[in-house]
Length: 501
Image (cartoon, rainbow, N blue to C red; front, side, top):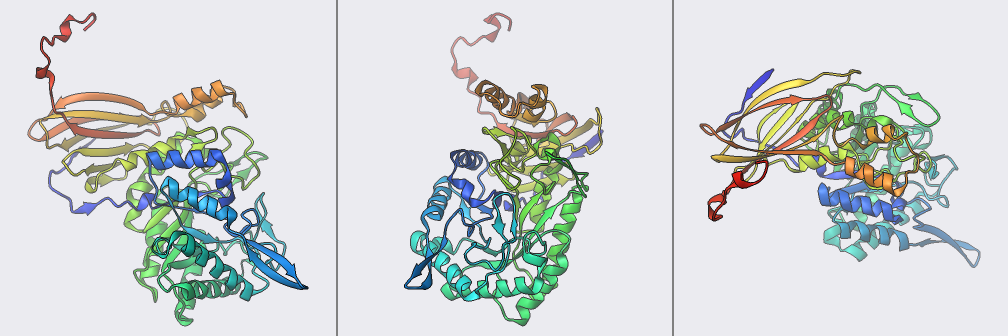
């Protein structure tokens, strides 16, 4: 059993909110669907991310770039009907766009190479002049509709994973650098205070970041932030309907955060903001690990410590309304989302919700625990027990002595685990219905709630002692609250007169 006595003294360390700065989404065109917006409203109510980032702003299904023929000449036409509807919805729900400029409109594309079921074009523009005009028209429109003060708060990222052939024709570094140059300078011509950055590469391509920073310095280009993606999956085993991985230890991702932060600080642009604009365990939207209690426990340490190294890290994604590999084929299909189809929260959803309850001041932190103090003196802490081995058991015992500012303490404990808030497990027990009926959906929603227990304890010398047994892949949130006892205001109070008490 691990025994920890937590000091009453302030640690001087603050728990940052970088973990909920941004969240990912499927292509922006999906925001025209009701279920998508319902999921986003739930995520914002329960977690409250500040920004949302997704592909496809310039894809044909949004319809921004069109061309008309006028007197034998091809004339661009910019249509903002759908993007206005989408961004209006985001802002009404309380989340701002983290703009990703891509993919290439088919009328402007230099080739026909595409990615995903929805065929996002990944070729450079055939006319960089028209590309610059498009970028300027889009950003200028946003300013006209939402105001300069608002749009200045929106980061603008140039493209997505250009180091991969699937996302940028031939993974041509020089061509991406040209795209960045043309795009960033066009953005700054509108207003020099707009924030633009890149290169949005995936893990394992940090040499791109080094070369990109060098290029921006040599060309004297504007650069307001660096972006990168992070996943921990090892090479996949792919079946017709699923993708299975072994994973690196979760410290692998934290090490990446730390190492790239160091690369930036040693570059010609030290101290630039560093945004992880995608992260998860697996990078594949058909990976069942995303649906599991393990994923919830596995990511807990990353949420706890990641903000020490990066200015944001954006979970990919908030919802299983997502179509990279075709329309989802089952209720649970390994999707990235915090919320499964039919509005069923996954265990990882509650990990994020639990972290929303953390206080600003860190009293204690290790690889399986984060203890914080809130303003007013209440305590909130999270403990987790990720287990990468197969099989039963793997319980972890812990004894915590926690400082409290109150004589009488109300304890609320919420738990997710293999046994609790695990709708994926119940769905398997149901026979994995692909398209469950409404009654089954309601059952899964009921199952998807954390297990809650409560207690009242009296402190001794400013401490309470808690003995915990964490089960496999458990994540538990404890909230220690002051009791304002009004029992003596009830005349004739005597619970012993109640049958069975």
